[in-house]
Image (cartoon, rainbow, N blue to C red; front, side, top):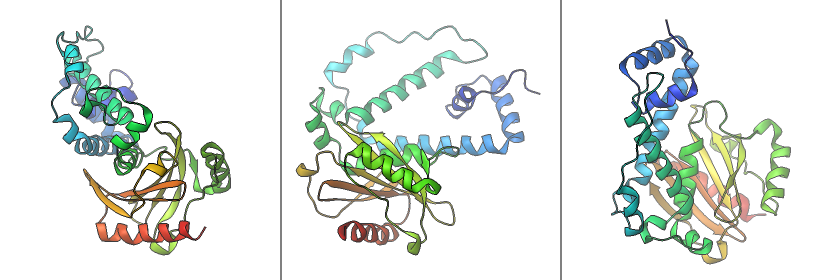
Length: 266
């Protein structure tokens, strides 16, 4: 029997292997009795591995001189409490902050300095922005979207208002993908929309739609493999689109072509 309630923080620390053996055993006992939490933990692990794969090329680069000073003095972890193995946990939390920063500033680490927003758009490809958003939200069990498909009209009005231009999710039912819903994401300088779909097996696919820097991007239909995620992306008019999923390139190409054709007809 657990000696204290298992929290969301416990579950994340369990995924990070940051628990004492005693608390780890308690969490495993909890997961055995709570299938929903066990499913979430599996999703967290998948997300963690996907993020590692996405950012591995950047993490393998030399640390810029401007950041070297941060590593001179080691971070002192607070005294362990509640059964936590403090040192490992705080190191992992620090690493998580670095990954989050990478997502926000794009090519900063590669260039060793913070760049203006328009340069950041060029530094971080549309395909990578979309893949990161896909990896972060597609494994979410409880709330993968902000507004569900059963409120599609409200979703369309909300996202169109926030992006400042009409936008509507494409219909992909003929290809086996139904709309789950959508959410608003922060871009480098403007809001971004993400629509999520799934097929009968639960496989999720996301469409990332942005108005940022589209006049500066190549409008060609392109493919990129971002870690475990395949992405087809293109620019059409005022929008940049990126379709992301962990499925076969050929299957994704069929769906991307259908998305392209639907938007091209508008």
